[in-house]
Image (tube, rainbow, N blue to C red; front, side, top):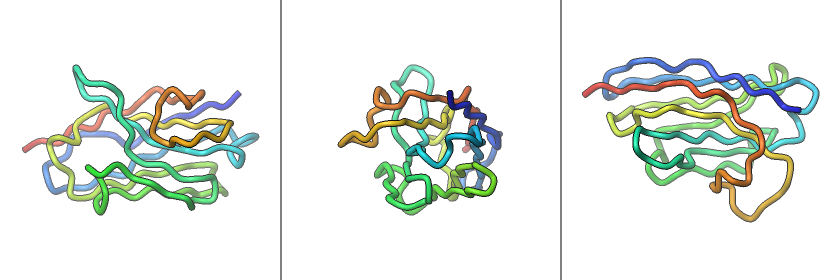
Length: 125
Protein backbone atom coordinates (compact mmCIF):
# COMPACT_ATOMS: atom_id res chain seq x y z
CA UNK A 1 0.00 0.00 0.00
CA UNK A 2 1.36 3.40 -1.00
CA UNK A 3 0.54 6.47 1.00
CA UNK A 4 0.95 9.90 -0.57
CA UNK A 5 0.88 13.14 1.39
CA UNK A 6 0.89 16.50 -0.41
CA UNK A 7 1.92 19.86 1.02
CA UNK A 8 2.90 23.32 -0.17
CA UNK A 9 -0.35 24.72 -1.47
CA UNK A 10 -1.56 28.20 -0.62
CA UNK A 11 -2.62 31.61 -1.88
CA UNK A 12 -0.34 33.45 -4.29
CA UNK A 13 -0.68 36.42 -6.62
CA UNK A 14 -0.59 35.98 -10.37
CA UNK A 15 2.99 35.73 -11.59
CA UNK A 16 4.15 34.19 -8.33
CA UNK A 17 5.54 30.75 -7.55
CA UNK A 18 4.77 27.78 -5.35
CA UNK A 19 6.42 24.42 -4.82
CA UNK A 20 4.25 21.43 -4.04
CA UNK A 21 5.65 18.35 -2.34
CA UNK A 22 4.36 14.79 -2.26
CA UNK A 23 5.90 12.41 0.25
CA UNK A 24 5.48 8.73 -0.63
CA UNK A 25 5.80 5.57 1.44
CA UNK A 26 9.45 4.63 1.61
CA UNK A 27 9.02 0.94 0.91
CA UNK A 28 7.65 1.22 -2.62
CA UNK A 29 8.49 4.69 -3.90
CA UNK A 30 11.07 3.53 -6.45
CA UNK A 31 8.59 1.26 -8.28
CA UNK A 32 6.07 3.84 -9.33
CA UNK A 33 5.37 6.49 -11.92
CA UNK A 34 4.53 9.68 -10.15
CA UNK A 35 2.18 12.34 -11.47
CA UNK A 36 0.35 15.51 -10.55
CA UNK A 37 -3.27 16.20 -11.42
CA UNK A 38 -5.53 19.10 -10.56
CA UNK A 39 -9.24 19.70 -10.25
CA UNK A 40 -10.93 23.07 -10.34
CA UNK A 41 -14.49 23.57 -9.03
CA UNK A 42 -17.05 22.19 -11.45
CA UNK A 43 -14.40 20.66 -13.70
CA UNK A 44 -12.99 17.20 -14.23
CA UNK A 45 -9.65 16.17 -12.82
CA UNK A 46 -6.93 16.99 -15.34
CA UNK A 47 -3.38 15.85 -15.88
CA UNK A 48 -0.61 18.31 -15.05
CA UNK A 49 2.78 16.55 -15.09
CA UNK A 50 4.45 13.17 -14.73
CA UNK A 51 7.85 11.53 -14.29
CA UNK A 52 9.31 8.16 -13.46
CA UNK A 53 10.88 7.37 -10.11
CA UNK A 54 14.27 8.77 -11.15
CA UNK A 55 12.77 12.05 -12.31
CA UNK A 56 13.09 11.21 -15.99
CA UNK A 57 10.54 10.46 -18.69
CA UNK A 58 8.73 13.71 -17.97
CA UNK A 59 5.62 14.93 -19.68
CA UNK A 60 3.52 18.04 -19.13
CA UNK A 61 0.11 19.33 -20.02
CA UNK A 62 0.31 22.00 -22.71
CA UNK A 63 -1.21 24.53 -20.33
CA UNK A 64 1.76 24.31 -17.92
CA UNK A 65 4.71 23.65 -20.24
CA UNK A 66 7.54 26.06 -19.62
CA UNK A 67 6.07 27.15 -16.27
CA UNK A 68 5.90 23.97 -14.17
CA UNK A 69 8.66 21.47 -13.43
CA UNK A 70 8.28 18.01 -11.90
CA UNK A 71 11.20 16.42 -10.07
CA UNK A 72 12.01 13.76 -7.48
CA UNK A 73 14.29 13.33 -4.49
CA UNK A 74 14.75 9.62 -3.97
CA UNK A 75 16.56 10.12 -0.67
CA UNK A 76 13.41 11.74 0.67
CA UNK A 77 10.92 9.62 -1.30
CA UNK A 78 9.38 12.87 -2.46
CA UNK A 79 8.14 14.25 -5.77
CA UNK A 80 7.91 18.00 -6.31
CA UNK A 81 6.00 20.31 -8.58
CA UNK A 82 7.66 23.70 -8.99
CA UNK A 83 5.08 26.14 -10.32
CA UNK A 84 6.24 29.48 -11.71
CA UNK A 85 4.44 32.32 -13.48
CA UNK A 86 1.19 31.21 -11.91
CA UNK A 87 -2.08 32.31 -13.47
CA UNK A 88 -5.58 32.55 -11.98
CA UNK A 89 -6.61 29.62 -14.18
CA UNK A 90 -4.11 27.44 -12.28
CA UNK A 91 -6.38 27.67 -9.24
CA UNK A 92 -7.39 24.14 -8.26
CA UNK A 93 -6.87 21.34 -5.80
CA UNK A 94 -3.65 19.60 -6.78
CA UNK A 95 -3.31 15.86 -6.30
CA UNK A 96 -0.28 13.61 -6.31
CA UNK A 97 -0.83 10.18 -7.84
CA UNK A 98 1.17 7.02 -8.48
CA UNK A 99 0.62 3.74 -10.28
CA UNK A 100 2.06 0.26 -10.36
CA UNK A 101 1.52 -0.76 -13.99
CA UNK A 102 2.59 0.51 -17.36
CA UNK A 103 0.01 2.07 -19.60
CA UNK A 104 0.30 3.84 -22.92
CA UNK A 105 -1.31 6.94 -21.44
CA UNK A 106 0.26 8.93 -18.61
CA UNK A 107 -2.59 11.42 -18.41
CA UNK A 108 -5.59 9.18 -17.70
CA UNK A 109 -6.43 9.44 -13.99
CA UNK A 110 -8.17 6.06 -14.13
CA UNK A 111 -4.79 4.34 -14.56
CA UNK A 112 -3.52 5.60 -11.20
CA UNK A 113 -4.28 3.52 -8.15
CA UNK A 114 -2.84 5.68 -5.38
CA UNK A 115 -3.83 9.28 -4.62
CA UNK A 116 -2.99 11.88 -2.04
CA UNK A 117 -5.57 13.96 -0.22
CA UNK A 118 -4.95 17.06 -2.32
CA UNK A 119 -3.64 20.54 -1.59
CA UNK A 120 -5.39 23.79 -2.53
CA UNK A 121 -3.65 26.27 -4.80
CA UNK A 122 -5.32 29.65 -5.24
CA UNK A 123 -3.93 32.27 -7.61
CA UNK A 124 -5.36 35.76 -7.28
CA UNK A 125 -5.45 38.24 -10.15
